[in-house]
Length: 280
Image (tube, rainbow, N blue to C red; front, side, top):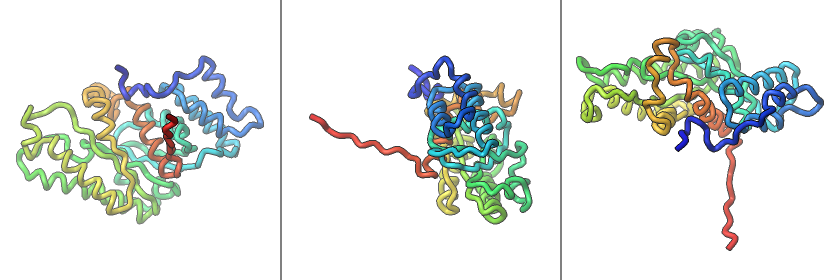
């Protein structure tokens, strides 16, 4: 049975996919429809990069992306995000958005948010994705020698500081991610019962993240739900984390990008509606 990580609902790209990407913007035809068509296939990271280059060429040429809607997205990531960036423009185009990315060095979340004149606060972005996980929030080890509520509260206050600073200095709403739960249970079957376990703290933090988004007008990207569908054992890759500081397995980059693209499309009013009729 295919995994959701493999985007099984999308058709495979045509054999001349690379050539079609190179042809975008080379004629008098507007690039938007061609880009959206090419983004609609089951793309690898390399194929997504070809679509991203076509978008970049068209933007540099000053071409109109209609019917795609422009969206300028800032990214603040606590781990290496560069390899994932190639997947994002194609996934956004799939959902009706011409994505323009504003990136910063990884693990500069607080510095970029709190500095009024930083790249991210000066970018005039439509939203800023806070791509942080349980490790950045200090929830990656059990709270055995302190009250777990204190650890969770500190994590949420750290997030709140970033959200408030982005609003204050750049007037930009945040996209908050929920936190996937690591698969290794310290207490086995009692992991959910132990108040200080990583699982229990992540559960509490996710509820608080949703509440924070509702309070501050931030958007929610439910990465925890996506990781559950993929499977925590596939989502988390300790070798890729130790070797490259990748926040999750590179195998899951396309489906993560698709989920983010779906959210950006919804923000731009691109959500699709379906009318089902009984023709009996």
